[in-house]
Image 1 (tube, rainbow over the protein chains, first blue to last red):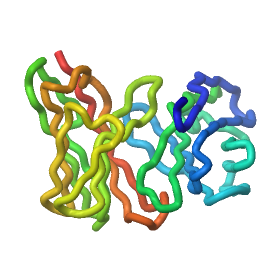
Image 2: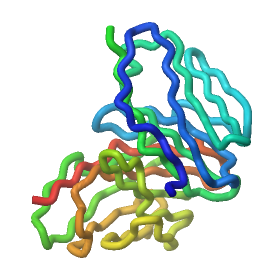
Image 3: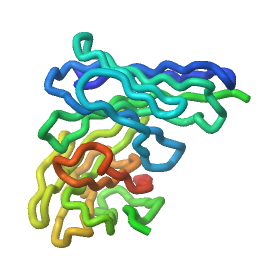
Length: 111
Length: 114
């Protein structure tokens, strides 16, 4: 079983839709939960992260962590064509420097 | 501008040849990482280094080697022992123990074995 599981998609939505991206994990020691955005042939860039459980909001983006279910989500409101990219979830423990990545979900927002 | 640079952007290699990928950072970060990205497999850790002259194997180190002689530089050599080296290689750096918002990725090198 992989440490982190993520549905690869692809996901295609119309502009303005709410997008939900999800990951599950197996290691209960994970404390940092990250979401990266990666445009084609570029390096990933950190969108947002949460520490332990709870929600975090940044503009149109909301990250949620449910540690009891080992499930994290990223919601994108009012999606824009510029949001078209691959979204990667990643996790790490409190002390470790190793990040464990999901496979990434490819998102296309259609104008 | 502070950041991570990787060169070259595209690299072609014949089977049986070793090749070295460059990674340089001017962020004054102690930790540096090499990841490999394949379609449908996400990012997998090859090697990481938390301090100069020290490095550890990641999940898929076989067929790869690294050195960390300077804080700014963490080159990766893909040897002929790597069975399937065609992939997108990403270098990253961070401040150890300071949280994920200190980790930055380079633009990547796409290696193709002919």
